[in-house]
Image 1 (cartoon, one colour):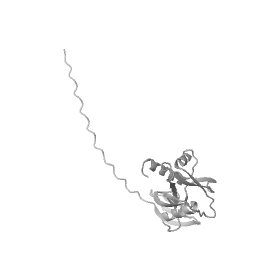
Image 2 (tube, helix red, strand yellow):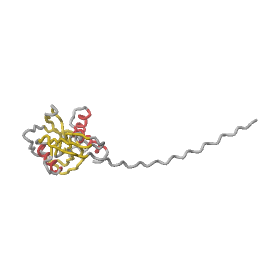
Image 3 (tube, helix red, strand yellow):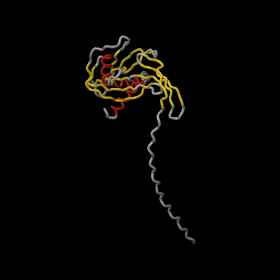
Length: 211
């Protein structure tokens, strides 16, 4: 009887060394050829910029320049720290053609520090003052055509006071638990971008124990 020899076991394959990823090279910026003031307004200016794009293509863009804005996420943790109240506003927005629920916010004056602007806007629109301030986020609102930074501040240890809104501002102050505000977001009833960002960021930070 012929004995069959067992085939030798294949040698284990040695894993190939992982190649190190090269750091991304810094990308070139657009080269500005000319910038012309096309419109000067009370709140913002529009410039028509001629530039060479990073691709080398010559282009003309209209850009809105703005001093920047601040957003205030005012939170009262004194009654229920596990589900604190947030201060919101309801006001009519002509550009949107409807009433919107928003976080208090406003434009910075020229050369005004962002935190000073946030304190001023919260007093003007809501009357509240805060003892503790934390900058949560800085972002571009719509960088395709708008060169505006928006900064969201968390305001805590609130004290109520008298509001001093602008003559053209008709603001209804709304105070509600964070959970209720997040339900409004889930139900599609809050349409303002800065409010969606601010509330969602704050709720996530609380869930993860970062606040």
